[in-house]
Length: 148
Image (cartoon, rainbow, N blue to C red; front, top):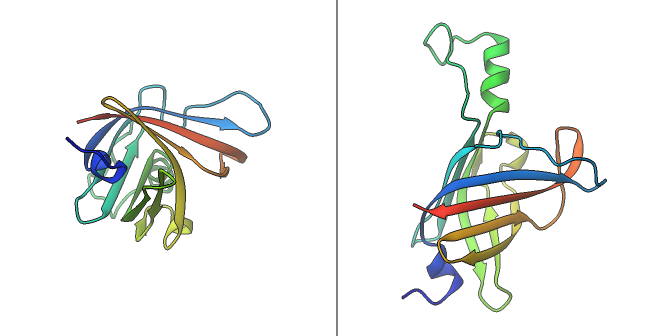
């Protein structure tokens, strides 16, 4: 049985919920809908990959990913989050960081972001450790994943 936080993270997790709560106490929102789709994976050799999307994404009319309209590209990028890279666990502090080697959002490429992590049975709860800017507001993100 896995004992360390790192050992318990290893594997694939399916996205259950993703909510963003503004620090100004305004209404929370669901950037990928109330029924988001996604997978986060942690590998034994220390890498992770997160892919999240809105379930109702529209196909490009051309069928060619290099031949979309401006609106199709905007929709494509605003309904998907993707990044991958090394992850690090501090067992003593029970903390986790994600390092973005690649990211759909170019501003995150090269960043290392701390996560608040809690595992309860087959559920993984991740949240931002500090606020991020999303949809024009400073927010904290809260995600729940179920072991795949």
